[in-house]
Length: 340
Image (cartoon, rainbow, N blue to C red; front, top):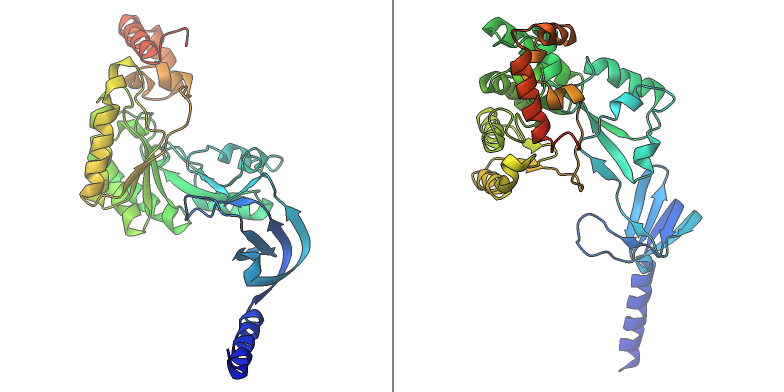
């Protein structure tokens, strides 16, 4: 190698070294197994944080980093905060003594979705302002509940909505989206949301779609309570297709022995919908148990019409006693029996 070539190579190396990025950071995390959410395999990279921004992720050789604090994450996994799409955490967020949301933060969940199952605190603007004023410990995504909207217009009444009532519900849905809602949730298994037929839900979903929102649903039936699991999944797909809105099915499951063999069928339905261009997804919790209200799990939905006072009246009416007890026993069986 000639002297001139050696000089050129040396200068080139100096140029490369001088091109290293200079990074000032408050915190530098080293030696952790980093999952970025992009690659499946972890990588041993460094992460620099400046103020509230991640200023560098990569090989330490590619940057000159000056940090006020260095955290050695040897033996730990470093990853983005988790998003929990179904939490009911709004009950805690509304309380200034619990709004730090530590139970979620301590599990690595930094974003929570609230207003699930068609049941949201109303109006969105009130709780958006409350969280902004008092502060919350995590990021919060607000959904507006279809059941809540229906209750505002019709109350807890088991009947179809009139065109005028649907128009009023659509207006509320628009107001909620204007206030910052991320989308709409339904709890079509529950009262009063479940008193709406499919077309009524589609009408509201179209308003949400026009505002680039999503449709998050607790299916009308996860078992054999009413329309059945397969029909309930088909209903969700129909709503997504006709309203042109992304669908997310909450805690998808085959609840009860009647539908235990239907998981393959509903997965095929969802995959086929995706192949047909419908944006549909689902979440599932990693345990066998489930939880809901005692009334929702056991009391026939028609008995709930009118609210708790109406439930008591019907239970005391001898004309309905045997029918209610029979249907209640069937519902308990669907949940796995009284011992569960």
